[in-house]
Structure formats: C-alpha cells, structure tokens
Image (cartoon, rainbow, N blue to C red):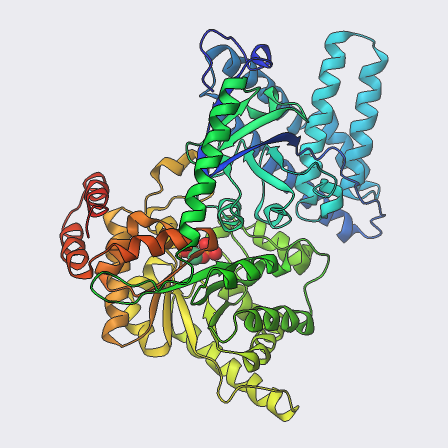
Length: 603
Ligand code: PEP
Ligand code: MG
C-alpha cells in the first residue's frame, strides 16, 4: 500500500489509496466494490449417529483449524509490507485470531458439541453464537470488539469446513451489481469458475499468485485481476468505486476525479487496441518467412466456446475438464459429460479439440467427487505431489471410465485428441491406451456412434521427470503438450499459487527452458506433434523463443490469441532460431530476460 503520511489502513479509508499486488490478468476495470464475505454461509445441520462419524468430523475440524492457522500466517506475512503502524496493528489482530484456534474455550466447546453428535459446521456456528452472546452481555466496548473477532474466526473455520460446497447463490455471485469488482481474501479456482464476465468487471484478493488457477481463469475470461495485495479488505466498503489495473497490479480505492479520468482514458486506449487486433481474426498466423503456426485456445468453462470459435482459433489445445466437476453436489454423469464435450466439438466446426482428462488434486479441488475423496486429496502432506490428475483417474476406474466413454462418444462429432495430465512414465500411457481400447470395444458392442479409430492419445509434459524422459514417452504417446505452468513449479519447487514465493516463479529459469527444449527435440526426432499450452504460450515475450526452438503449435487463453498472432506475423523464423540458440547458451535468467526483450525487436 502506498500512502505516504498516513498511519494505518483504517485512517486512510476515504482518501485515494493505492494497493500494490501482482497483476495477473491485464486490463482496467472500474466499478462498485463487492466484498466477498462468507458470513452468510448457510451451514448444514445433521446428527452424527456413530462413533466413526463423530471421529470423522473431529478430524475435519482439526484440518479446518490447521488450514485457518496457515491462512492467518500467510496474511501476517503479507501484512509486513504495509506501513509499520498498520502492519503492527494487523499483526496483533491476526495473532489474537490465531490464539483462538489453539485449545481455546471456543475450540473446546466445538469439540464437545461434535462429541455429542452435532456435525462440525453446526457445532462451530452454535459455539460462536454462544460465545458472542456471553461477550455481548458484558456491555463492555473492548469485549464487544472481541466478539467481532470470535465471529470472524468462526466464519474462517466454517468456510474451511465448507470449502467448495457452497453454491453460487450462497456466495452471492448472483445478486451483484453489473460490473462489480470482487474484493476477497482469497478466490479459489472453483469460485472463479462461477464468475460471469458479463456481470463481473474484475477482481482483487489479498492472497494468490500469478500462475494459480484463479489467475488462469481470470485471463481466460479477460477479467482484469490483481492478487497478493495486502490490506485490501480493511479499506474497502461495498458499493464504493474502485479501480483494478491488472497490468500494473494496482487497486485504487476512493479514486479522485483526476485518477478516474486517467483510467477511463486508459480503458478507451485499450478498447481501441482491441479493435485494431480484431482485424487480424481472419488473417493466418504466418511468419515473415512463410511458416504457418497453429494457434489454439485453452478452455475451462462452457461459456468460452463461442469466443474461441469467433476468434478463428485453429482448435482447442487444452480443455481443462476438471472445471466441469466443480460447484456441484455430484460429479457429472457420462451422459452429461458427453453433451458438454459434444457441444465443444461441434462448436469448433471440424477443428481439433484436445480434451484433457480430469486434473483434480493440488490446488484444484472438486467437491462433487465426495467428501472422503476430497479430504484425502486435500489432507495429503503435499497435495501437489500426491494423488493428482492421472494418478487419481487410474485409482478411480469408475470415474475415469465414465469420462473416457464420454470423450470417445464425443469424438464421433469431430476431431478429438485425448490428453493425459501429470504423466511420468510410458507405463501410464500404455495403461490408458488399453483402457481406451477396452471401452471402445464395449461402446461398439452397445451400438454407440464412434469415429473410425480411437482418438490420438497425448501426454502433458509438465513434470521434470517426464521432460527428461521425453524420448521414452515419445514411444508410447501420439503427441506432447508442454505444460510450462507445472513444469516451472515442479522444477523450481515453487508453489504456483503461493504469492509469498511468486517472485521466484520464473519460466525463464534456464533449467525450465532446457527441459522445454529437450522435450521439443525429443518430439521432433520422433515426428510427434508438440504444442506448448502453459501460460507462456500466450505471452508474446516467449513467442520468438518457442518458435525458434521448433514449436509450431501454441495453445493459450482466448484473449491472448490475436496478440500472439500479431507477434508471429512480424517474426522471421530463421533469426528466431539463431537467437533461440543464443538464449539457450545463457545460464542467467536475468540475461535471458534481456535477450528476449531484444528479440521483440526481431523481424
Ligand atoms: C500447465 O501445467 O502448464 C498446464 C497447462 O496445466 P494446468 O495449468 O491446468 O495445470
Ligand atoms: Mg498442469
């Protein structure tokens, strides 16, 4: 937060205040604040009849408390960048909240209620209510303020207990003014999936990094967004006008008339640039020396299909099917998945659609898969290294078979490719190929409409081990899609969604670039199609380097496609290849960045 001369977040509430975060999705949004609070959550109430059920809820409570402690620690680390007085005030408050999560009277009360058969959510709500009532009876203003803290801690624990189970109506995305700017402590991937870009103008949150899925969905929807901005919630009130500058990573509360004018002007300039780019829709993505590049889109949500087709994309390079499983009480049936996939395939009118099988786990959770499964994924010591993606699919044959059957049937309506996430060994690919062949025969016997042959089966190269064994994987896979997001995370041991290490997340690290180059070369040697579908594919800074390495297919969030096409049309491939060789000889990420900026001037 930059506001010289002011002491605390609270005292600056009505003057123009600028918050600095990480700009994760470009563009300017101006609109009324909508604070995303979870106090209104309707907690379910039921009885725990058996000892086992009561034990289960006690465990859920322990995990929710642990998560709350981690959240408070992250908020405290974040608040250190506030002005000293505000940081101190916030630190004390967060410490007080953390203390309540230890064996306080509140927690003991909740445990005792669960022990008597009350489910965890209802136990938290009742115990918070009782404590607040006791405090309020004392009619002491200091104690009254503590009652608000108890309520806040209760909501945090409740939210953790109910994560992902709340539907859109409960969270309140439905009833919000048009163009609202969402301000939250944190926005999960499942919550971003509920955002309607026709209603929401943009969003900002205290926590979150540039490569997490909340950021990815924001970019896909073209919503300006800033994450990792400390102090936000204290200075904002619902309904007030706020500016989100997704390029510079700024949130401006209580903007002056002059600032508003400046930003409205910026919005006009951006609209103009967008109209200019739109003229490229019907032109090919071809380099100056005549090499045609395939430009595909990444899709997460059904509502993005129309935009992708309208942009003239050459296909869908990555359909993240996990979003189909979020924000619903039960997983979609085979029939429902088939209907959705068929709509996408038909919507792309003969252009290929690459359907990635379920990538749940890590930061992406889908509560429709059931409490037991979700708890076991989320409760792992290292969820990103645990049962995620293909590991989950192979462990849950019923779930996987329903999805594969839906994909095989959708393939009857147009060209489809099947993509497997988080593969590490050729054995996994062979196993899936066998399952696919078996399901193919089963569907055929049942008389289902199918294409002539099973669709090509490809792998994401997103784990360092897969990249280093790319030549072996090339023997069993039909194509590669390089997932630079996870490849960067796993290579550098940086959690892509953690804003505290966001400054260390760098796909330009020579280790990441070498793994990408190694995988591209393995694919080219085996004459396998290879694309890049991580976020770097939509960043014009990387275009010359990737093309210079031999990549001829890029898949990205739809709003980036025309900018990348513009870049390609100004690029000379021979010079790009020379320059890529030079970049690959450099070992310093800073120097690589400078060389890439230089390449921008290449023609
Ligand atoms: C990646 O990891 O680069 C990728 C494209 O997959 P996701 O972002 O969905 O993990
Ligand atoms: Mg990935």
